[in-house]
Length: 473
Image (spheres, rainbow, N blue to C red):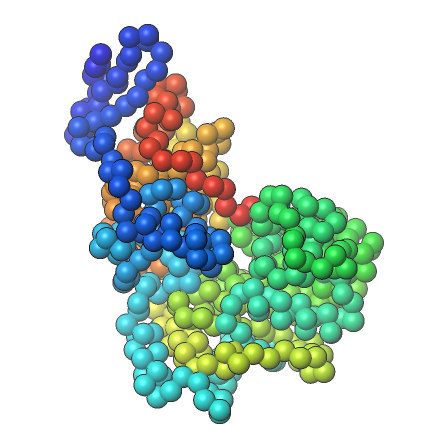
């Protein structure tokens, strides 16, 4: 039996009611009810990848099961601005991870790419050092005058591990108190050796630290953002020599809390590290801590620093950085030329374009869109994050299912989207408007599910996505 329930945005909407008057499902004539069952090129390659590659790929955040199992495009053939083409040559607008936050200037930025091409023609790695690392070091230090020395790496995880090595050398104590996600190395996963739930909201719930030496037990301890008393108890009890934390992630920086942490670290001769791999360059030109007037002893930058090219930097005070001179920190590919060259050009463009202002402006617009739609359809959501790393969650038992449904529907509209958006200067208000129009229809459908008029399981065509990282800040 078909029952007309209304016309919305020009789409004729019906409810199908079975003879037993029990289940409902919504459809309209513009939607394709019969989706192709054949795997596309991306899904076919993902099946091969799971056989050949440990974990299927090299970064958990890009695992297709976190988005839309059995359907997420998974692989790209080319990219430009905020557009991505998959292996089937389908074009999508990226309203999701944007390279997991690496591309503030957009994909394949011409100026950055040309700087890299020039370097490749001249030679990327030789017996001699590249001069660009000196120029980049001087630029970063001029932006952060509290720091006097720099060390470069290529990934966030190794930069975090390097910072811990240096900080332990400086403090003379091995124990670390941390808040946030800081990579995959032994020092961090050791937190779960004592209690397998320590990393639940920092990283992943129930993570088994297999392969981490058991003698690292009781060397790393997690604490919650804004919970100063919890941190102070750790410092008093565990002989903490290093405090490592993200300045902010799911909330704006809490200046009062950060001041207390800074004062405690100074009083106890603890090395304070701000991990700004993600927050750096997103709300100001440099580290987010610049907006708080609270300086760490060390800071870590990555992701957006090279606009998609591999480069990370560890900045620190002179005495602290020099403490590691007797240790050993070295790697061949930390000396390649592409990363520093890309970073120099990226910083030049960011400074010229005031990129942090543009993405913050768009992020506030995005917040407004979500708030408006949640009120329009009486859907309870939590909105969090910096404006340029905007996120929302449904306050519902079906939150993960709804997130998956958004991805499913947005793919039909040629958007890569879920409930988290890293913005770039390639995004604009026209894109946000189109995104908003599509999300309006999706929120309407979700509201019908919440009212009991529809059953989400009847309209979700793929398995529910897996949960992502948790966050304590």
